Image 1: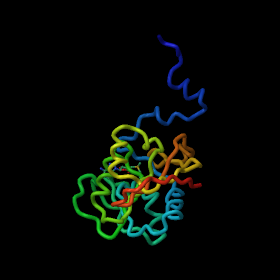
Image 2: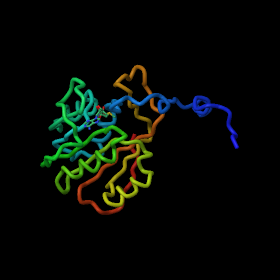
Image 3: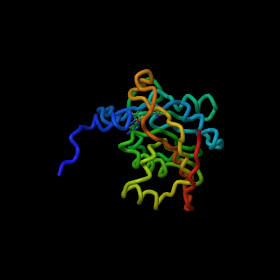
Length: 196
Ligand SMILES: C[S@@+](CC[C@H](N)C(=O)[O-])C[C@H]1O[C@@H](n2cnc3c(N)ncnc32)[C@H](O)[C@@H]1O
């Protein structure tokens, strides 16, 4: 029996949350990340080097890595005026001597993790900025069994990700994010840490 007569908007209004999730998703899942996320990552993972930002958008993360002297390559499926054009999921060339870091298109996040781990060398890292809810789900449980992340850094303070890079329109975030860090070959337990 129906016990709720409101609509989705009413639910979100009740919760006091913004309803980004109810808006139409950007076609290629373009949500630019506040560069602060990249600064936080470099603080906790200072050994990252020769970074490939493989879904770089307009370079919000990549520019921070570049400034730190750690960026080797920046690519995206779409030309957004930064980096080279390339479909990451079609890539077959091994990526030697470097780490892969991005906020991927969320609908292909699992595929991005698998592809990135396939391309890098043992001991190298894959860092993905993902919704905290990436931890749940049956298919992802299998992914985590096969490839346990070494550390999940939960962002205690919200980090905005702006649709189409429009931070004026979307200055805050209703979504909790974390940096998921894999080290290729790691088979131990996953450690959870809290940042910011
Ligand atoms: C969530 S946005 C993040 C952009 C950037 N990493 C950042 O953090 O600001 C995801 C990006 O992935 C790109 N993308 C989608 N599918 C892709 C693919 N198959 N290969 C490479 N980039 C892709 C989109 O064009 C979009 O720019």
